[in-house]
Amino acid sequence: MAKTVVLQRKPLSLSERTYLPQIVTGLKTTFSNMFKEKVTLQYPEEKPNIPKNYRGVPTLVKDPNGREKCVSCQLCEFVCPPKAIRITPGSVPEDEVDREHVEKATQEFEINMLRCIYCGYCQEVCPEEAIFLQDEYSSSGYTREEMINNKEKLYELGGTLPDQHYKWDKKKVAEGEGNAH
Amino acid sequence: MFDVELLLMIGLKVLFALLMIGAVMTMAGYSVLAERKVSAWMQGRVGPNRTVLPLVGSLPFVGRFLKGLGIFQPLADGLKFLFKEEMIPGHVNKFYYNLAPIVALVPALTTMTVLPFGEFFTENGESIPLMLANLEVGILFVLAVSSLGVYGIVLAGWSSNSKYPFLGGIRSSAQMISYELAMGLSLLPVFLWVSEPGTGAMGLSLVDIVNSQSQNAWLLLVQPLSALIFLIALFAETNRLPFDMPESETDLVGGFHTEYGGFKFGIFFVAEYAHIVVGSAIFTIVFLGGWHFLPWMADPWPATWIGSLIGVGWFLAKTIFLIFFFIWVRWTLPRFRYDQVMNLGWTKLLPLALLNLIFYVLLVTWLDQPPA
Ligand code: SF4
Ligand code: SF4
Image 1 (cartoon, rainbow over the protein chains, first blue to last red):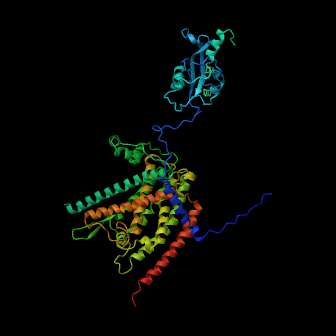
Image 2 (image 1 turned 60 degrees about the horizontal axis):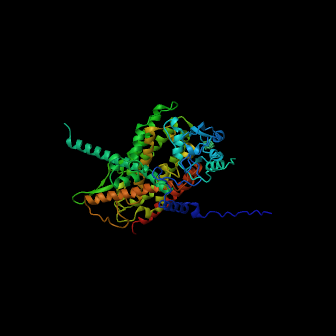
Image 3 (image 1 turned 180 degrees about the vertical axis):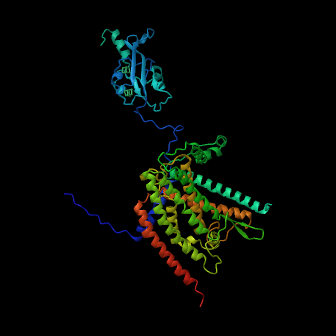
């Protein structure tokens, strides 16, 4: 059983009742604080450290061969809670030989950054690992139109990320050997 | 027709007065900056360090240093206040609403006319105090005029016709009345002490009180209790934390100046800091030996114009330290509750000041007994 302890409060001594010694202690504390290191980050000149797994602006990435990975499956468009993504599907251009076996590609891919809530669902749902929320944290513009990132901008922001699977290469090889799927 | 001498004298006085206003206002402006900087440092921040003037900023090393110190910030702040739209809310009493900032600023600027801030040596070694008007009743004048400042706050609170300013105004008048008494009573023993027969100093002159401390103990050391009471009352009179009842941002929005904006708010702001500057100067004069060097020491500087310059500098240094002390206390202590303020004023400070006065009356009487 818990025991109740009644705290004995000592009556304050005279010096304590003047508050003055306590005030002096407080003054000492604030004074020594003046010479401590400052914690301010001088923002535009100094950038904050972005930790790994930071969820910044969503971007589209290419694989190390420079091919667009997105296959326009539109899962991200579907899953996006605030409906920030709009995809116009298209076909893979004829001249891209090593991607011709992929059925679809995007004609246009827009993410409206005024709607995006940086939830990361699009990155999670993407079967192609084509969309990533990377370390870009400051997006600004003068008009609403500027805040809509189009395909070109998205690939520019995304750049190239290492690929663990080369899914489509494997598929092509398997097809060649006659055991697709 | 015209008395040239007289005109010249009036001209000179006006010039001096303008210089003095310039000096005090600059100090008030820079105390605002000091407040921001010191509070920032105490909280581990950097404070204003972005404002810069085009030409000065591009100086190689000095420019960056000054920018980092935020030296140009008061200029920018002042300009901002000047160019802001003057809003007058529809529900205020226009006449008193406009009058209030002026009433707040004028006493602060008036008290500085009787503040001595140094001495000037004539060719035959006499010293003339540097001040605008050498009043015999200096301290009385200061006390009388500076307590007028509360009218600005009360007027602002009342004419704003809204709850928060009203509460601020009421609090401030109650506070001023309670601490004025203790303040006056804490100063009496000081003047009793100084004007004991034989020291040559008589009356309530601020110059005499400074000179009585030259090569002698500072009155802070002779009468620590009076100094303490005076200092506490000074904090209350200047509405500084822990006694910033009229403003108390956390419970009264902005207190008495909630309905003010633009330049009128700026005037209140400057008036507050001008009060602090003047208050620090008075404390320096009465308790810290004014422009004289350390206690029990003769001034080490020569009795020439260089000496008087150093003296003025020394006086300013003490004053600036006190201003820093005001800021320092503000960022250390929390605010008293309203009833605690009243309690402290009436039941602690006032009896203490009375006892202090009686004690020194008896002591001085005993000391001044003619040798039997
Ligand atoms: S991060 Fe979330 S809100 Fe933003 S585009 Fe992706 S799914 Fe939509
Ligand atoms: S980014 Fe991924 S989920 Fe979105 S359409 Fe392209 S492949 Fe599908």
